[in-house]
Image 1: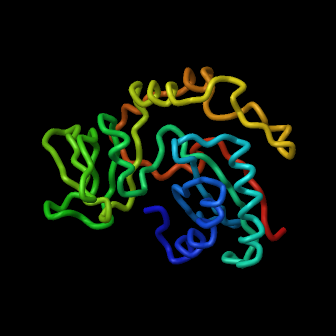
Image 2 (image 1 turned 180 degrees about the vertical axis):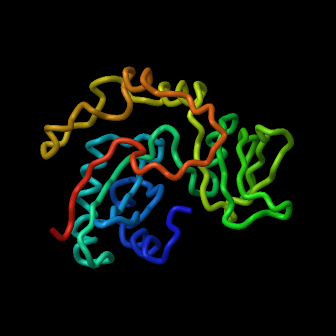
Amino acid sequence: MRAQSELEIRILDMIEPVAAELGLDVVRVRVMGGQIPTLQIMAERPDGTMSVAACAKFSRAISPVLETEDPISSEYHLEVSSPGIDRPLTRVGEFANWVGHEIKVELGTPGADGRKRFHGTIVSEAGGLVQLDLKDGGQASLPVADMAKATMVLTEKLIQAARAKAPPPGAEEEDEDDEDIVGLGEETEEDFDDLEVDDEDDFDEESDDEGEDLDGDHKE
């Protein structure tokens, strides 16, 4: 799920070594269409945090690689961001970190019962299978390998978990090249207060604006 198309897989292979050198994990790569395509790259530290300065550093580090390898021949918009609170879950083992929280899952193809979409609370993850208590009743055991999309549902419980993980004000690391963004960091107390809990049971299209991000145009 980290990359779906051949182009996205190719880009992931290009940038993952750079991310590893910076101590980052690539969460997801997406190329979204439009008159000028957007290359969206989500990344985070192993502890699940990702500051604006870290986004900037990663963006600068991968830009020469992308320019040299030239995976997208036309002009495109580069967006490097954190996954955000209602984040996508894309890797085996990641679901276990969010036991007790709600997620929405869409399978690539319908299961044996003909169902593709599920909304429930994570009970466990083991052996590549995620066990859910479904919101509409019953349980489901879903292989991570069969998932096309899995996204955290924004609830009060998730907001509180993110609030507890957020660094204190002023904890943002400084970078001499990022004086204009130092201090922004992840979500602040005001940001958490402005969040709205997701009470809907629909499956919206993926948001293009997940967390802290830095944008840049390429091939102007």
